[in-house]
Image (cartoon, rainbow, N blue to C red):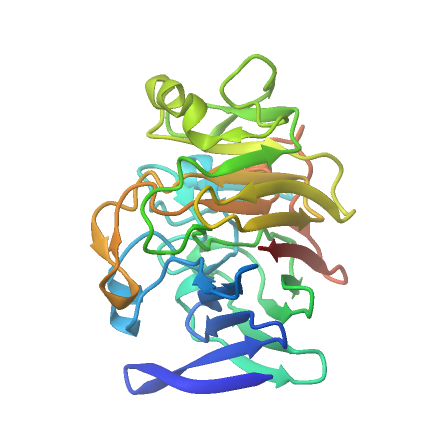
Amino acid sequence: MITERIFGKIKGVNVPEVTIHNNAGMEVSILSYGATIRSVLVPTAGGKKIDVCLGYDTIEEYIQNGGYFGGSIGRFANRIGGAAFDLDGEHFTLAANEGQNHLHGGVHGWNSKIWQYTTDPDSNSVTFVTKSADGEEGYPGEVSVSAKFTVTEDNRMVIEYSATTDKATPINMTNHWYCNLNGHASGDILDHVLQLNAESITGVDGKLVPTGEICSVAGTPYDFRTAKAIRTDFDTVRGLSTSGYDNNFVLGEPGTLKQFATLKGDKSGLTMTAFTNMEAVQLYTGNHIHDRKGKANAEYHDMSGMCMEPQHYPDCVNKPEFPSAIVRPGEKYYHHIEFKFEG
C-alpha cells in the first residue's frame, strides 16, 4: 500500500511525502525534496515498531540543517580532491564546498532538488525523477536521473538509482540515511555490532581524500570482517585523524549484487543486512551530527546514527588506478542497494 501527504512547501511549491507500507508492518517514507528517506519503521519480533531513521518533522529543518539526512546524493557522492578533474582532454572545475574539495555534489546537490514522482502499487514502489543541467555545479552533460524505492514483503528497503547523460560525465550516487537500529531517539550507535565484508580501505590524506593507496584492514581498527561492537576500536580511530569512522571500504568487483554488511542493534535486537552492486561503501559513524532536535523533539548528538553509503571510490575521477565512474552517452548508470530488516 502507498499513501501520500503534503509534508511542506518550498517557495510555494508542495513537497509531498510518500509512504510505502507492506503487510508485515514495515513503512518507509520518502520526501520529494532530495528523494529523501525520512523514516524507516520496522516491526520487531515482539510486535513493536521502531523508527530506525534519523530525520525531521518540517521541511524547513531539512533545508536549514546540514548532514544530508536521508538525501539521495549526486552527481558525485563523497569527495573530489581539489574540486576539479580532467576528462577527455578538458578540465572541469567544480564547486568547492568542503574547504578546497568538492563533497556530495556541491553546494546544490541532488539532495536539495524537488523531484517528480510516480507510484506503482503493484510493485509497492515509488520512482522519483529529476534532471541535472549541463554545467550544474561545474559538471559536464545533462543527466536524467531516477530513484526507485521499493518495500518488499520480507522487510527489505530496496533503492535503485539510474541515470543517463548526453555527455561523458562522472556519476556516483548513494543515499545518506542515518540508521540507529535501537530507534532514532535512543542515543548513540557505538554498541551496535557490525560485520563488514571488506579486506581493505582506501588510504586518505588529512582531508579524507584518497591518496591512491589500498590498505589492508588486517590488524587495524578498520577490520570488521569478524563482527564487533563499533565502540571496540572507536577511540583508536578518533586518535588517528578523524572524529570517528569516515572511511571507504573496498568490497570487490562492481556490477554483482553482494551482501556487504550485517548490523545489529544492541538494545532492540533488530538486525539489518545490507547489499549492493557497487565496489565500495563509505562507513560514517555520524561524527559531525552535533547537537540538534530531530523528529518528535528527539535529541540528536554525534554518533546518534550511522551511514553505510555504497558507491564508487571517492575521487576516482582523479585516480585512474581506481574503477571508473564515467558514464558516456548511450550507457546507463545503475546502482542497486538493499537493506533487509529482521527482528
